[in-house]
Length: 403
Ligand SMILES: [Zn+2]
View 1 (cartoon, rainbow, N blue to C red):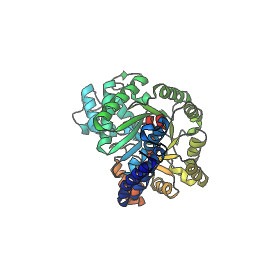
View 2 (cartoon, helix red, strand yellow; view 1 turned 180 degrees about the vertical axis):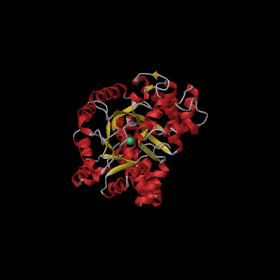
View 3 (tube, rainbow, N blue to C red; view 1 turned 90 degrees about the vertical axis):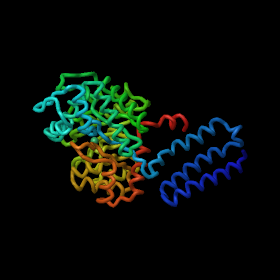
View 4 (spheres, protein in one colour; view 1 turned 120 degrees about the vertical axis):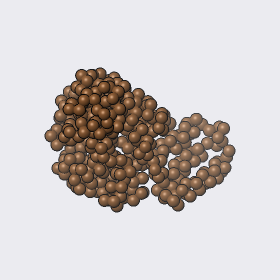
């Protein structure tokens, strides 16, 4: 095939995305760009049969690296910020209670999902996570089941790529049954459950381990080392470290060295910061400048600081926005997501803790919030998912191999 024939083929290929572009110009533009990049690299070959392996690999790599355009196709959802213990519904918890024969305090062995719901909702906000972990924790079969159920939930929500996070320390034990396992076994059980779910539902899923605020810096280092030991490119594998928990009482300072160590050791990192009130922009600042986080969880307070906004844009830091969760913190946090868009920052849309006990939301419900309250268009929502896909920690193997 000669260069001129390649050029003709390229022109014909480009008619395809252009026709898509009439319906969805953003997807069309990017698809057009991807195919032109592919053809450009392929065009460096005189003949396909005599193409140098490096040129052909570069051409394929170009196409692969631009797969982040997929979310621009309507209905492709990407979620990077969702907590495992905030995403398991009462029906699954009931199933696990029955399988384990768990006696819930004041209830006994529950007879319905409603009784499990009552048990969890008796606890105040932060402690509800403990209640969920008491049911799932310390038992490998239950952990696998919860992880698999999470993937089914994401598939039902139309999420095709996702990263789920949790605290392995909390998941590794349950006082309800005096059961415990090691954190490493708990993480491996999550990976197995996620992989089974991924195979059943066609969802790409990876996990992020959470170091928790309120714990000692030493425990943060231990979590970073666990993430380093278990990081994996396999489906369901560990792809990063997060810092999560009560930012108001336990700000970043105590964890800077740990998160910096994780980053310098080669882990992908994200840090919950700037979530709870407008005065927390300094935590976003330290997450980016001192911890060198790849992504920021929430980050709403950042919009209070014009210089920080400038740096977030310049450094192309992806912010994991969570609309319903933000609304629970106040209108200021939701308005911050609008500011992200106005300032052309990179951000995605996430459910954070979608189950009934916490945010009681879904990807579709969060899209409705930004659409109704912030006047986001379909194109804005697709751009958010595209940004999230581009900022993902997992599923980049072929890119690394070819580009
Ligand atoms: Zn979160």
